[in-house]
Amino acid sequence: MAEDKKTLLIKRYASRRLYNTETSDYVTLEDIAGFIREGREVQIVDLKSGDDLTRQYLLQIIAEHESRGETMLPVNVLTDLVRSYTTQAGSVVPQFLAMSFDMLRDGQHKMMENMAKVSPIAKMPGFEAMQAQQEAFMKAMTGGMKGGWPAGTSGPAREDDGSDQDDAGLDEIKRQLHDLQTKLSKMGK
Image (tube, rainbow, N blue to C red; front, side):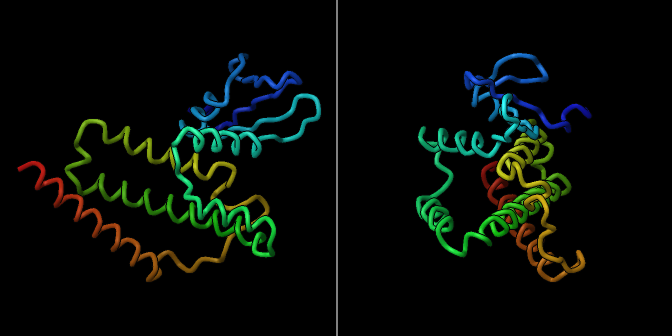
C-alpha cells in the first residue's frame, strides 16, 4: 500500500489532455476527483512549462460540482472568499480555512474512533466503508494542505493535548454519539 501514499503525477499536454503517469492513459477531471476521494494526493503539471496547475484544476473540479447542483459552499461563504481577495484580510483567510478543516477532520476522526469503540453501529455491515469514506472526504476537502497548513507554515502553537478545549470537544462528540445511539435504539424498536 506504499504506492497509495505516493503523489499521483498528472501531466497536461499542449492539447489540454490530462495524462496519468502511473497508468499511462488519459484521464478526465472526474477521474482526478475520484483519485482524490480515494485518498490520493494529486499533482497536475504542465508538460511544456513545468508549472504546477493543481490548484487551478482542483478549483475547476469544485466549480463543476457546484454547477451541477452538488452545492457544499453557501453563497455567503463564496462571497466572503471573493471579498478576501481584495482586502487585507486575505492574508489570514488561508490559515483560517486550513485550521477550520483541520479541526473538522480531527473531530470527525475522533467521533469515528469513539463510535468504533462503544457503538453497536461499529458492528453493522459497511461501517468500515463509511469510516474510510469519511476519511477520504476530509482528505479531499483539505487537499493541498499538507497536515492542514499551507507549505512553509507551522500553524499556531498548540498547548498540551490534555487542554480543556480538547476535553470539551471530546465531551461534545460523546454527547452527539449518545444522542445518535438513542435515536438508533428507538428506530430498532
